[in-house]
Image (cartoon, rainbow, N blue to C red; front, side, top):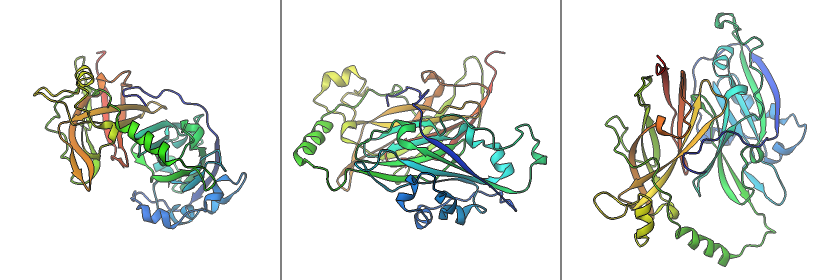
Length: 375
């Protein structure tokens, strides 16, 4: 995806809605689930393609967590042979008490994010092609009148069609976002299969060609991070920070800060020999000399008032790249004024922002916006 371009619409996908259960006794606390917990309970890969199957109701995820977890769980195949399949179906479960799920309406605002960590590409779309009805029978029902039970909704979607995922060998990480809630991350490998021909010389040529590419220009223009920016992570990862509430005046700013430590891809390295390109594309430091790299970081922006997620790609220049276990790694901080992003959707709302880079994703940063620009 190109830097700064918001996602507005994507082609339709296959969507099936199913299960709605009520259980007695609600749990108010949210609990983080570890990856190994989810790997221990899962359906066989073939179950996700069985048309008309009710296996989703027997999914061990449901049995284990349906009355003990508030949040979103995603389940799907771990390997897909490209020559045998043409879809990538996933099951998603949204679990919580009636009061919890009423505040975050899954059918209306859930979003799907798919990362290609080896290429640092991202695909973002509304989870459902057509926004569904509220989980409540009456959207105006006062919270005090909601039942004390626990409910779960089931949704199925074809990730390939929903996000226009390229149908080629690779590794992908899928995640569902719902305002400030995020699901576990599902890793799926698309593989060519044993009968596919592999040409090592062609693969070598493509890798060398990729390494020669120049990185895009910084976006937005390189700027100094505010003092409020979080510290750089000691391990690989991304951290975001923002004021919890911002009052927008006529000349106001809406600033988001972050810090990161990530691997650097060959195409993100600045090539000092390409002096003219570097100068023309803002890859030269003020002190002289080219930057060492320009690293891509994706921002996914959700709104309490909008149904469609927005995507922006930051290109962050760094002066230094270090070698860790023989591979280039960079780190840095940033502060961006979100109002300077192209077509940034802002008004009287609460924003939920996530950052993605390669294998890593941030926790959400929430900003409550009080808009007084028209007063």
